[in-house]
Image (tube, rainbow, N blue to C red; front, side, top):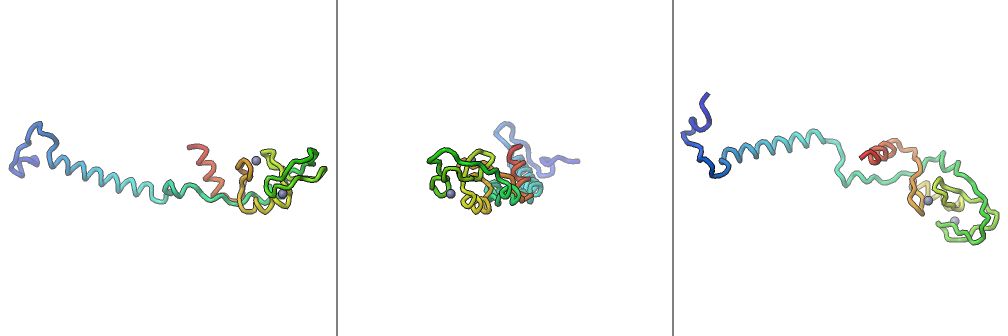
Length: 138
Ligand SMILES: [Zn+2]
Ligand SMILES: [Zn+2]
């Protein structure tokens, strides 16, 4: 089979930089790769879609939050900023932060993280749990 140069009746120009044909081939390779890349990653979210909005904390977890008796006078609930009554039962998250039950429950029905330290509670949202696992791995 005749080479490209024979067919087109021209000669390589030697070491004067890449041939126009070479550049064209590169462009083709790049375009093909872009297409292949786009096809391969179709359906994979773009980075700006990766920050999923956090779902509410698992209802079960919220219902079964540990209750602790507040004994230190002056301890405040970080949500409403009011001090606990001495001997009052507060809801404690696994991160040890304590809240009025009436304060933390509405919060956790909106999002799954501690309002103080952003400790994440498990959720009932399978998709989010998967996403979280992926995030930890990468
Ligand atoms: Zn409170
Ligand atoms: Zn916390």
